[in-house]
Image (cartoon, helix red, strand yellow):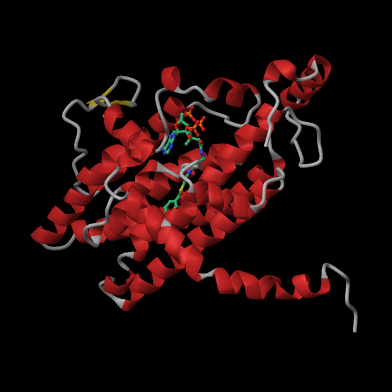
Length: 319
Ligand code: BYC
């Protein structure tokens, strides 16, 4: 696929496009858009879709070991929601002219990313709490702002996703709360889960604004409505009081409450972040291998679903 560089685009069309964005109009699939706008959305929406789908793996790991039937049913429903989010997002991404097969091929070839957070292992039941509370909590902060993104199909997909994520955040916080009200060992497990997931959750928002190459145009075209650091700060300020309320301690010795009520944190380990997004996190290889294997195992289902179309070559058959 060839995408024109911004300087190769017709300046008049670019100007009219920016005027539509500035007027808060939504861009729809058949509208003219610069290739760079199309490409940013292809990349971001498909990476978002891959994150939802790969994100099922760390939680799926605990389905057979949930501590009660109630918690098992809730976790199962949550994981199914994530599959649904992946599907809405692949549909939104397909409106940009790339097929779902191609998106999945890019994932398998390592050309597409998915969120760094899903490359960390889930070691105990409290990790289910930490993921719902922190990972879905971080996702909501980002996704609420994306309900106002300028590309219509992406913005609309976000509305339902946000509603479901807010339920997920609460189920995670409920697990943490119950464990913090439990035995000494349960409290230690909850604290240990927070210790391991806190910093990777902050990394979900991406590099600092000064180091984020994609942000400038994304903000100008209102694909992104807030910067990586703004969203990260919102998440930090919202989450720390929730941790304190149930007796958890944020694993950051440099944490400081400021006069305006917001929190200043220590520095994120960016070397770890870049290492993970380059494919060298603790679980990157395992996650991709599992996806490739599941995709290959599901080939017969995809074939069965399209068998009718293949036979009738798209003819409308009425009985
Ligand atoms: N992980 O210039 P930047 C969920 C990459 S899942 C990996 O700031 P951008 C859930 C970035 O792609 C929710 N890569 O980029 C599911 C770029 O690399 P490329 C997932 C990252 O796009 C199951 C480079 O770093 N949410 O809810 O302007 C269970 C430079 O970054 C990450 C989304 O996907 C990262 N954390 O901003 C529970 C939200 N951060 O592509 C929960 C949609 C950065 O140029 N995505 N990179 O090679 C976004 O909002 C934006 O893409 C980002 C990055 C804020 C992530």
